[in-house]
Amino acid sequence: MNRGIMSYLKLNRLTLLDGIAIILIVFYHSIQTFNTPDAIFWKSTIEIQVLGLVLFTFISGYKFVLNHINELEDKQFLKKYFAKRFIRLYKPYIGYSLLIFIPEYIAIYIATHYFKADFGGITNFWNSLNIQGLENLLVGTNFIAMHLWYLFSLLIITVICIIILYFFNIQTLFIFSLLMLLYNIISAGYYKTSIFLIDDRTMLYLPVFIFGMFLAYYKDNENTKKIFIAFSILFVIALIQIINHSQTSYQLTTCVYGLTFPCLMMLTSSILMKFEYINNILQFCGKYSFQIYLFHVPIIVPALQRSVVYVANLDFSIVPYVITILSIILSIYAYEICKKIRLNILFE
Image 1 (cartoon, one colour):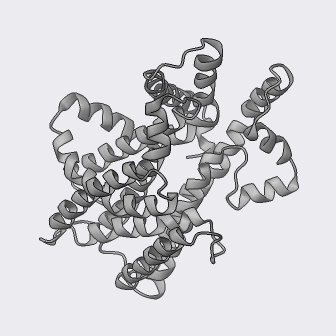
Image 2 (cartoon, helix red, strand yellow):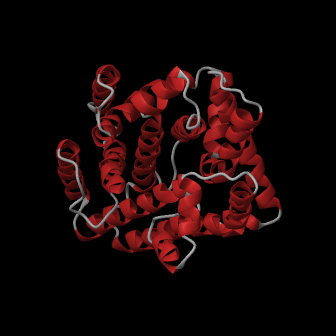
């Protein structure tokens, strides 16, 4: 494969998977204020946000190797890629926080002083308006847009992978990921605090990123499809176990989903692409997946939730699904407006 080029079919498949991932993540945030049986099932039993995040993470690792498979031992490339990737992830982390701060401040001020709202997110926001809060924001604890922890974690994951590739090789990276997976599984059973100076969630998603790299690196190997099939079966078995034992820890769920769910999606994506209507919707969502991830919270989804639950007093099972669709549409519109008035320079 030529430098930086993926086949049209492969690119479409990965874009479709990005679309699935972002829909799962937006849906998770959309069901937070609902206590219908299916909402509780999705957010508490299935941990649907983990499915979206592991899929995003896997695809990121897969794309990295697929695009640059012939450059992974080139130290000059790795240095340039590190700088490019740092800007690509840290700029939107800071830029979107700056963009959303004023509208979020106004919304929280109105909620606090006029509607007498008082819950964890509001209290944390007011308590973080100081130098300590700013310092925490710069190093990954974002009180303005808490969902951006994932961008910061993805940045740390990329740094770790590039350092190992720079000083060692990709085989060492694969061995390292096995050790990290083992650590994550053990810590899931004896979980208290991390022995690393890094967010535990980062360590959980690191093996998933490297697993994506691994399958992209050996994509032409005849055994790769067998891995997809075997791990897809394991996902179904694991899902049944998780449903039957709803107390499964977040750490263990992430470890299991990270290895199995992306494999199932890689297998089923070729089937989904045959259904034109479904394919077009998922491709569209995948095309805007990064922008949707940025914009859907902390204003759009919460505003829709409160409008529906507290104003319209609707709490039907179908409502979170409607909120998910509206949130995706409004996020894209919000991005396009920012792009039109050139505010996208803050995060792109």
